[in-house]
Amino acid sequence: MKILLVGNGAREHVIAETLRRSKRCSELLVFANKVNPGMEALASLYHVGNLADMKAIQAFGAEHKPDFAVLGPDNPIADGAADVLAEIGIPSVGPKKSLARLESSKGFTRALLEKYKIVGNPRFRIFKNDEGLEEFVRDLGPFVVKTDGLTGGKGVKVMGDHFSTAEEGLAYAKECLSADGQVVIEEKLTGQEFSLMSFCDGEHVVDMPPVQDHKRAYDGDLGPNTGGMGSYSSGKLLPFLTEDDLTQAHAITVAVANALRQECGEGFKGVMYGGFIAVKNGVRLIEYNARFGDPEAMNVLPLLQSDFAELCLAIVRGTLTPEMARFSDRCTVCKYAVPEGYPEKPKKGERIRIKELPEGVSAYYAAVDKKDGQIVLSSSRAMAFVGIAPTLSEAERLAQKGVECVDGPIFYRRDIGTEALIGKRVEMMKELRG
Ligand SMILES: Nc1ncnc2c1ncn2[C@@H]1O[C@H](COP(=O)(O)OP(=O)(O)O)[C@@H](O)[C@H]1O
Ligand SMILES: [Mg+2]
Image (cartoon, rainbow, N blue to C red; front, side, top):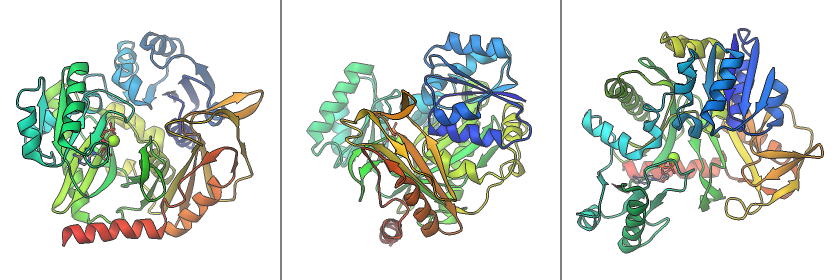
């Protein structure tokens, strides 16, 4: 099969690697914004274009006629890459624009759950003007303000984290209203967040192992929010989750897949990535993304034992079964090396060197540039290192050894995947559940 992969981050690097493990993938074409040195080495053809240009993606598809496409990043998915490819007969692992509202509009998803009576929403309201806004906020107690569109993780403000008084939160809500004409206000939930990504062929939903990401920049969950500093997984469950939590999260995704099909007249084909939070009495939905997570893809795809190209083909054909997505039960830890000063004032253009990696560690390129044959920082997350082992502590040790191989002005989180941090999460849930 000839497969087109769209995107050029670490997520797409691990997608490329996993497709390349398949005997069915004879040609891998990449359409990217810039060179990813790891992906370039895996691709049969690596094309640097513009991921925001749907016409260019379509023209590339028309020229090379892949059997199907795998869409990596949120922006081209929200902009309709699946639609322009479908117009010329190329199916995608990645939803059409209308279905991608699951991620690109937080209001759409909250309203969808409400309309189809799916449990999992916190108390919320979508405002189109400020009528009743103040009363609602006073009534909610601690609350969260969410911009409606894709904002690269910068549109959500949480009371206690990003603002401290109701007045400040209201001021931000009004800002969103005048910028977008819509804002979502919801109750602030307390608990532990986790990512449950599921393959969906429009009808059938098959889960990947759950993963926990770490958004804060510094150890101890301090500092500004980032694209994700690292993540871990531990087989079928996470240490702070119960089987019942996972069953609830799965049921929400199944119900949402059905609701989407009814609402949009066709099914969601791709990855439904539920951002869930385990709370004192069950599971709630924080948001959906319409693609693999980055870093989460690097935790789960290396564990896939079945054939990824076959799995993708089943998604586009609508013939997905659980046997097609078999995962090893091993533990994984992923740590990102990011430029000093990231995310606010990241170093850029400075050279990094990667020493020889210890055995058992995988490395994935995210946002780096090549200058005179050298790898240099490009202001966003630079490289991710993944350790895979029978235990979390061994996986953590490997990921840590990997990230220590980077020479240059970078930093990383030492604590991701450590017993100390995971122990705190387990304790917190124990206390919450009483
Ligand atoms: N209702 C909520 N209660 C508590 N925290 C929330 C809530 N909604 C969002 N958050 C926090 O804000 C973060 C970002 O919100 P999210 O909806 O995932 O938007 P995005 O990923 O697009 O920035 C979440 O990971 C979570 O930590
Ligand atoms: Mg999120």
